[in-house]
Image 1: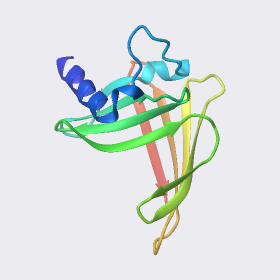
Image 2: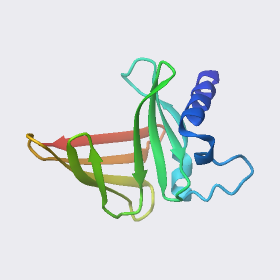
Image 3: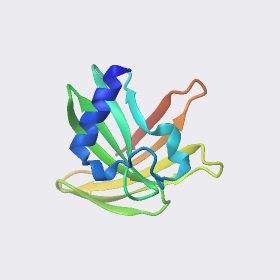
Image 4: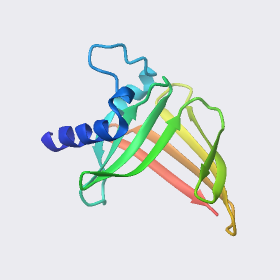
Length: 142
C-alpha cells in the first residue's frame, strides 16, 4: 500500500494539484468513475502502475502509466459518448467513450490515420471484475 501512495503523490505532482480534488471537497466527478480512481498494478508489466485520476471535467479522467517513478504515458478519457477529435504526432483521428446502460462498463472506440500508414480502428472496454480488479481491454484493427 505504501508504494501506491508514493506513486499517487508523484502523479499528483506531475499532473498538477488543481486536477485532483482535495478530500472533503465535492469532487463533482461522475459517480460511475469512483470505483476506478486510484493506482492499479499492471499484470505482466514490470514495476508499472496505471493511475486513474479525476480532472476538472465531471465526465473525464486521465489514465497515467507510471514506471520507475516517472509518467511514461497519459491518456484522457471523456465518457460523454461524443466523438472527440484527436491529433498525436503525424496522426489524426477521433475517440469516444460511452457507459453501458447500467453504468457498469465503459465502451471505447477510436479511429486513427497516420501519414503513410493504413488507417486503424480500436475498440476497448473498462470494467471492474467480480473480484475487484480493474479490466482495461483494448483491440486494434488495421
